[in-house]
Image (cartoon, rainbow, N blue to C red; front, side, top):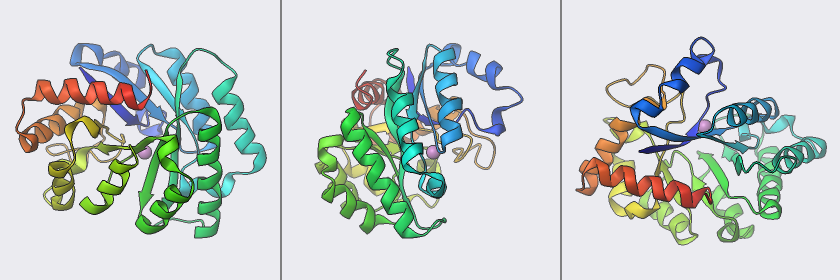
Length: 256
Ligand code: NI
């Protein structure tokens, strides 16, 4: 029983076999998936996917690298999409954050990160945080904005153990995916050994970040067994325990 807490099934990488792939999940032990938007247009495709599949939930928001497209009007649209239907499918605001590898400039990224944190607070939804090469600014904003009152997950956690402690102290979960199986994952291995298992969730970020032995190929939730096995080995428990605990954690994260 696996919960993929972070996937992008509206990506064009799935255009050829999307429905076939999603239909195979149940028999392969993938019982829930949160599809995460990254732009205004993907908010709409994410909503549609969640409405058409019982096991799928939606996170709506704009990724830092797409944040130049945001405006007060765009923000208002996200709010409307989150609230117009009462079917309980929208479970988070995300993915939002800072990515200093990418455009646009820091000022624009920060402005819309803060604005979307504020939206999450008003809507009482958890956040999915994307942060790359921006450890200090992300933490400063999360503290200034009282992230502990909002809650959520730091997706694809890539910083140090010390930084993990800051977010665990704020009540956040850490998203663990394919990177855990990579040879150069020493920093993440340290974090996973340090963090309690009841604060970790499984995620693919598919189509990206496929775990070993499928590294470099298109990723999907079916590959999460490799991540779960690696996590089980590091924590000294069996895979069933990892699946059960990360399932419970994901339901807490998304308040299901
Ligand atoms: Ni993502």
